[in-house]
Image (cartoon, rainbow, N blue to C red; front, side):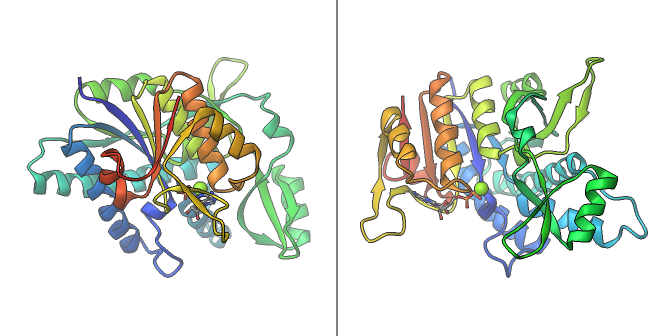
Length: 313
Ligand code: ADP
Ligand code: MG
């Protein structure tokens, strides 16, 4: 049996730096990242690709804000769907070209993916994720009144909308993703952590104006397929203790107990490495065997056991 991996690609798979944010720059970055994933597929892995969408959602919201005198604004769940399509398109095109170059008879397909969240998730009590542009206090208060936004003052830089970041509970299209994998397709799904939805009183799905962390949603997907391996591809080759400090120490291998211990000791910051380590811990706690963090260019070497940070149960 071919082994199955969920590979979550981070923001750097599309935007290398602030000067390269245009669609053509994002595509160039996607080509580079997909080259390494195609090599993994050529080496015999079945791969499901997930990805972040933070900056891309920010661009859509900004356009929406700037044109609101003329056009309807775009709700956050729609932004999620839009970015899944646009990013999926870049990955599909890049993979198709790379498969052809390598003589691989494979096809990539993007699945618009909804992810169910719990209405009672404590995250809804304290929305924390800043979204959209800065506003004046008057504007923020008006949005609070008219649209029910939660708004906060952001460290003297102005006011911003904040939304909840609830935990993903269920991948709505899980069966479709699995069926596609079994048919040999390379699936791109759960983009941006998935489009958050809730089941209402009538049993219908409703889109939610929230964001789901892509690392947590990817871990949930990896468990629910289930996948043999969960890879988080980000901007670092390995995880470190005392990161960026004189006594920094790179980690090759981590047990579940060590991961929990280093997380509790504060080695991994909230907005970046902590959610990745937490996602890997939850993957292993729910029956996963192996998780890996590395960067796209070292994916092949890491899979050969030469680098990366491995977490094992
Ligand atoms: P992504 O966009 O892929 O989700 P993030 O920028 O959110 O990536 O998080 C990855 C970043 O976390 C790395 O590029 C690195 O700069 C930073 N980081 C923070 N703490 C650590 C650590 N202990 N070891 C390695 N990288 C760390
Ligand atoms: Mg991130």
